[in-house]
Figure 1: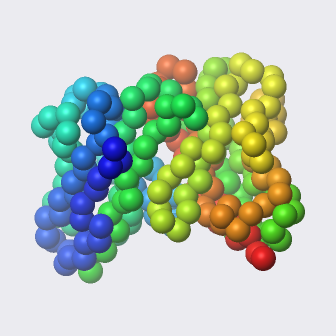
Figure 2: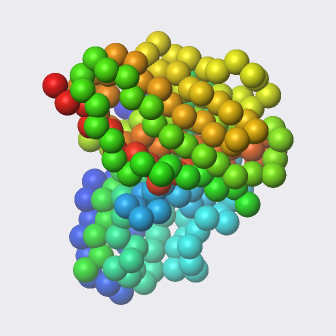
Amino acid sequence: DAGVIQSPRHEVTEMGQEVTLRCKPISGHDYLFWYRQTMMRGLELLIYFNNNVPIDDSGMPEDRFSAKMPNASFSTLKIQPSEPRDSAVYFCASSLSQLPDSNQPQHFGDGTRLSIL
Amino acid sequence: AQTVTQSQPEMSVQEAETVTLSCTYDTSENNYYLFWYKQPPSRQMILVIRQEAYKQQNATENRFSVNFQKAAKSFSLKISDSQLGDTAMYFCAFMTYYNFNKFYFGSGTKLNVKP
């Protein structure tokens, strides 16, 4: 399996522009997560889906952020309009099990490094 | 609200030696799970070890073990016989029984293993 695939790997754009991050989870995984990683705050859970349905979006920082999962193999995280403080690495992860362990870990993508100028 | 604190932003250890990374957390829950994740320079996140709060026995995975002190809300990670490949960011994470899949992560500890 190719693992969780995120695109783009790097994104540099000017503030005010719309940014769309993409994620393809591992086939068969029922859960998909979006995280944001910054030096100041570490790793934060933004939102997660179960069977394509958003379950908890309480971590989404502002209305400028939105996430969708139109089908089991694709999800997007959109920021509109983008701001410099949105600069971070954004991770997507998927899992089969509700509770990760060494046999059923939560699989992370390589992340998208987002820089807003 | 659940919070996770890692008070050591960066640590170094000589190859083959032992190092302990600290983690404390705050919760009013009695049942929960604790995790350590490793993030090498490749940016992948790798699950290192998991501990269930109802278990008194500390979890171990090969060279990795934890010291879980429930009353003190402390969950430290010990890496024995450190290897160069252990160089990475390490994140402590917390999850409640009743809200599966909502992780609360610490800010991370950068571990440098020196040859």
